Image (cartoon, rainbow, N blue to C red):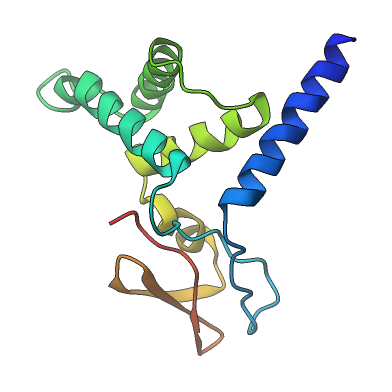
Length: 154
């Protein structure tokens, strides 16, 4: 069996595993855009791995975030990425190469940004974001309120 065949089989198995463990995201009716995936209820390996890795990153780089020599801007982002790579290797987080990019982006967003709010904050058509709970987030677009399927872990 060729290496490319093995990789394709692994990726297919990973997609099937994810499909079986995820509920489909509700469809937003008012804007026609695909909403982001909400955190799942109950045990979830993806969320658990993200939380564990994020906590380890914060524990490792925490001391570098304050004081006269505190990291900022691009140097902070570079340090967080390097720290993420070290932790993923050390903790042997099992994710496919395809999922690794998404995992890294989500942990970076949770660590340096506003997590699930980063995308709506970057969207110029959204004029307001309302968080009524960790899993109840509304946006205002073109004067209309829309319930999103965005949410925080807790």
